[in-house]
Structure formats: structure tokens, C-alpha cells
Amino acid sequence: MIIALASPRAASSWDEGLDRLRHFLAEASDQGAEIVCFPEAWLPGLRGQDFDVLPFGQADQDRLLRSVAEWTREFRVAAIVGTERLTDSGRQIVAAVFDARGRSLGSQTKNQLDPSEDRFYIPGDSRRLFEVNGVKFGVAICHEGWRYPETVRWAAVRGAKIVFHPQHTGAERQGVRLTQWGAADGPYYEKAMLLRSKENTIYFASVNYALNFPESATSLIDPTGACQAYLPYGTEGLLVQSIDVDRATGLLARRFAPERLRDGSTD
Image (tube, rainbow, N blue to C red; front, side):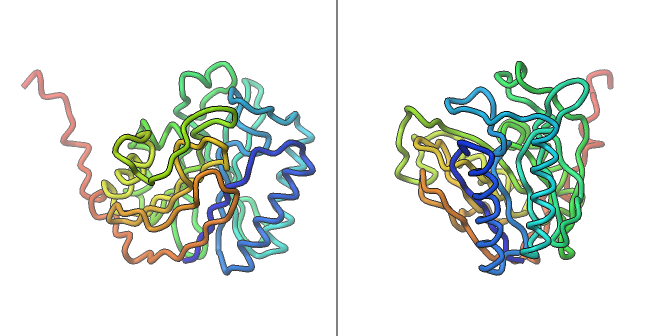
């Protein structure tokens, strides 16, 4: 399977954001990608960061989903688009998934929020697998993949060959400029990517914004825990890579035995 990881800058308007979305879908299709993943809540933007978030009401939500359906069908490429969902209880962070015929395959909510996000969002409460061209995959959103590795294992034990990880790490206005992927003295995020792949024997695809001061690169990790490829820090672009799904055996995930975690203190 050929996958694409889109790393755009935060959008300054809906017209600009939708134009970038269409551009990346078209480019991914031109390069033979079967699915393209965008960062966490990219449209309208992740709240609580150092950039402005676009207005997001029901009409904006509907417009975005209509556009994704139209363009995935036009360019014959599946997509995972980070956005929000409006509910009666509040806003959720979601990854909306569409196949290459423009059909919605559903969405994955962010169920484990970072504490800083509690004032903006409410968590979801379920997980699901998706399938494109016979390949099963899961989605774990940002904080879930960093701090809650069981969200990745949930998909791996159910046959996922790859888990996509839409995320946001870093800042626009100030920070440290990284120069070496996975550096020992760098932020822990890239090291966590390696673990999510290696501990499950699957691919892990982490997709960040193109920030001025990113704390991790948009990266693809192979099932051995090696970084297969990444985008240069702070560069807007599209990472297109081929994955060998037969290498994603899920061996270590399949050996997970939760029944051995019972409380034995009363034995």
C-alpha cells in the first residue's frame, strides 16, 4: 500500500484551508497514494495553541465533510481528516475517514484528552477499525498515542497493519528548532513513535502540523521500530511512502494476554 502524510500549516481562512486540502489530496493521488492523513483538528485548528482557530459551526462542519467527500471521489484517494464534531454536550476532536469513492467510513473520536484540552473539548468513548483496499488500520489522536499506548494496541490486536496518528506538537511563535530526528536530548515524542510500532509490530504514521517550532516531525515508523521516513522540520509538505503490509504481523500485539492482568493480591 502507498500512503501519504500531509503536513500543512495552520489555515488562516476556510477558503485557504479547503484549497490546501484539495491540493494535498490531488498531489497524493498523483503520486499513487491510496490514503492520505492530515493532522489533528487541522480544520478548524487545534484550540489552545498559539495560532488563531477558524470559526466552526454546523455550516462549516457540513461544508468540510461535503468537500472531503467530493474530492476523495474526484481524486480516487481515501482520506483521514482531522476536524471537530459538534454535539449537544460539546465539541469533540475527531478524525473523519472517507474512502476513495467519497463515502464516509465513520470517524474516530479523541477519547483521552490532554488536561489542557478539557476546557475546549469533551472526550469520545469508543474505538473502531477502518479498512481501505483490504488493509485494516486504526487511528489514535495525539495525546492518546503518546501517553496511552493501549489505544494503539487496541487496533493492533484486532488486525490493524498501521495506526495513523494525527497530532500537534510544537508552537508557531517560539520554541527550540530541532535538527536531529530522535535525538537523545530532544522531546520524547519521536521516541514514543518508535515504541508504538515496535511494541505492536505494525506501522505507525504520525502526522504533525508544519509549525515554525515543531517538537516532532511528520514520520513513518516501520514494524521493527525504525524510522522509515520523515519530513524536514517546519516544512509544509506531503510524505508519500510504500508500506509492506506483510511485515506488519502484529506479532507482539497478538501475544497480549489481558487475562493475566487480574488482581492477584487476594490469592
